[in-house]
Image (cartoon, rainbow, N blue to C red; front, side):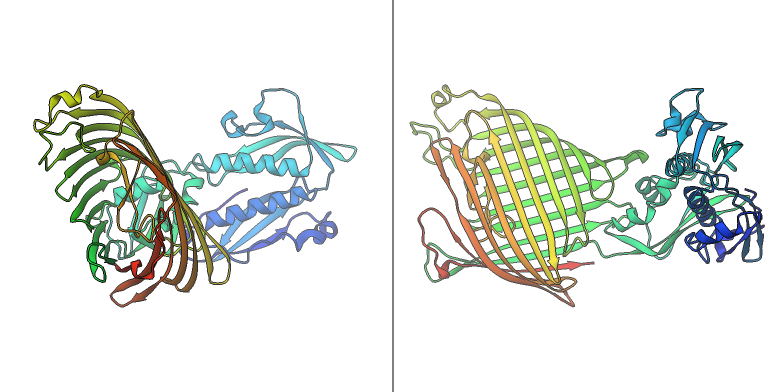
Length: 575
């Protein structure tokens, strides 16, 4: 094929192709299939035209026109005259490699080194050519063409050699960011996997729009544009900002068990800043006021693509204060490797110190208390997989997170406790922990969405103290119970939620959740199957997405009482 490029980029206007058949012997037979060729009436640039012509040749060869080829392509204004040679029709062909480089034969039968010809039918020839051209497109030759040459005819079948014309070798000269969104170009280069100077790779270029859609803080204002000219090749991205940073507030109204008829307040506030520094980073602050005068403070920061590598760094700090009993200080460092979309893997190193705050009455104790001064250095891996059609109110998709870790746990002798009580303990032991969280969304049709989910966790150690246990219960784990009021060494929580979608960010919901858990720790051993159920609504307003949630719960032999219902009011504001 001969492609004549005009001086300006062909991507600046539409091109209207027109087919001209150069041989007259097959006019009648060719006319029978011409209506099925589906050549586009217009294309946006020469690359798309080249792809359309390639499909055209494949269709012709699949219909028996094994010798079909494009004689030339001549551009005139916004028209492209395609001179097509259809050739005769044949039933079977014997194909041998002509000049195709070994690397471009990857994934084909011709990859096997042999001097003998291979037999192909029409469909196999088409697939063979598609694989070779795909290999070319992904290695810097987007305008490559392939044809059958040295054709000899014998009783309705032909033998031929496969010849490749790679045409121009293409590198990406520039990746331009246009539009109102402000983001560091180096972030986009790393995220889409394409940098100036890279060899053209069609598989990466074709995924740009899908990759951009997976970003929470920018979107495409219009489709990206790839421009080819004699001088350079450039990719233009037209990006606009999306609201991704958020403020999340929850107020809980819970029955006061010590004063019947009265209520207690709990609360939570979350501030999450994303791309505030225009480098795709995340900064997060989360504070909770829990029942029994307990508080939880969490800080996290994540910076992606450190030193232009695929790796990001995450640092975290958590401080949990259990009334006046003990305080936990958790420090974490993780290296994160991003896959596509919101899928990633983390290798983490955590340091946790738990210190007793009140030792009143312990000096004369005859047994160790259920709490202890503990330090743990823990390391492991975490995997996060997510594919949702709309992250803020999904109708279909899933979210899954798996974490596993191990490390050394050290118990420190408290000077206020009789040291003899520690003699029966192994002060240094190995501890294992694992967690699994899965959410699945399915729509049977219309506005209906079904959301089953599973959360589980386990801590394994010869002897576990109460301030090491998993804490659960409340709005984001087991609804119908006070926030983090239940303690477990092993647990599994299942939920089933029905949603009726009102608007993009609004829905009514009914839910049922239940858990199995056991608490096997120092001086304690029991298990239970608590469950909760309720209803609520999320609705969008000018100031954010408001939510109201009402839940009842049952554990052990306690009856279900309406007056013990838990009410939560929340607001999420994206900015």
